[in-house]
Image 1 (cartoon, helix red, strand yellow):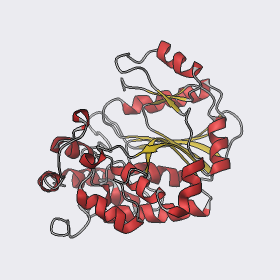
Image 2 (cartoon, one colour):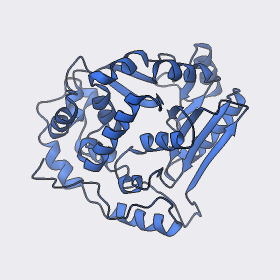
Image 3 (cartoon, helix red, strand yellow):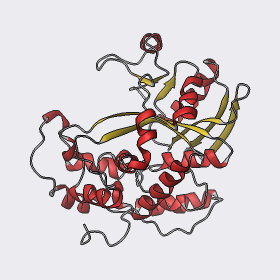
Image 4 (cartoon, rainbow, N blue to C red):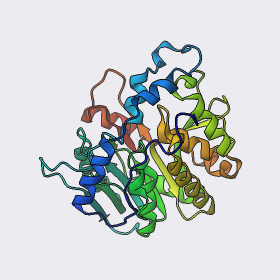
Length: 328
């Protein structure tokens, strides 16, 4: 990998700046579009050994490129449609000031509409707490994060950190496709009590085809976590909660920002999840990783069933707090 990358492959030459203007975002988006990583990814893809043990789980070069270039092709704004960056920090209901639901959507696809429907659903289910969401733009709480905006899916942790700096202790990230089904107060209670909320499972045998050997080696060198060890707990971040005032989470943030400065740890088909899994796989996070497991967080419809109020209600009756929409 050293021969391919002498620096962060997602680097953009933009100054550290906390308050960003529309013209700043126009320049950042121009810099994003100038990044070329396809040929490098193709070279790295050739280093993946063997064939998939599960044919359905095969990842080709276009899968890697689609995931790794997500930040490069995102729309921070769209002047033609008059879509400008928007950051909203709002109180929903009464009380719960230490709790915050966080979400981000670039101006790609229907994600902004999903975020707005999430806010409406939180009101409907009786949520009492804060919500921080972004439509376009980028979560940039310290001014450094804007330099990381090409790094795929890195925004989740930055947005959570901004919620913490705004005074929220228990912070729950939700992907834009998540639809609240019931009051999430028990989810926040779990974060308060255990330090986290997330889904996890053991690394599957075919996981090696979704990560470059060089990425696996770098993450192992930095954290001691082997992403191909069958005993490693893989952490999903569709919903992901942290109690941000815990000392372990401060260490987590420090390591995550270091990974972002490097860029290369995010080179895989699971960019942010591989990094978060590696960091959380360290012994100092054992308690949060073990007790943060929350099994009834996310429901979804059967493979061939379209999203519908009927499916939402079925998931709610099963005890799920959120529904992962497919038709987003």
